[in-house]
Length: 173
Image (cartoon, rainbow, N blue to C red):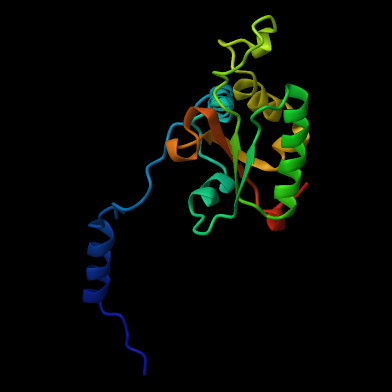
């Protein structure tokens, strides 16, 4: 059965339409002013070039390692060439063995006796500076490395450093 619309119903409907209020959604997002696209591009470039940007996934995973597989190499008494060759082979071998952390002991260079050669002088500890520099400049090694950091005192202090390697199983060339 269909009910007929009465005059009272029509009058109520008209009152409703005339007295309507605007519905405001307090939870809606506010529109933001869109900046100049060039300014956004500059912000993005600054972010990418910033050393304090969000760390990569490998770095985050490094912090969550519970059972590290650690290997150690001692470069005392090596020449620059011998040390560079040894560290390159050692990093490759450790990566293949899925080692997560390498402790590289270079020594502080306090007992260098060759004063004539600037690389062996007392002021410029030969391997302490040259080995990390060699690693940073060697692209074939840096692809396996998450980061290098100074060693804790119990692992050699200022005469050593750590190399954290990527996971071989998750590595993409």
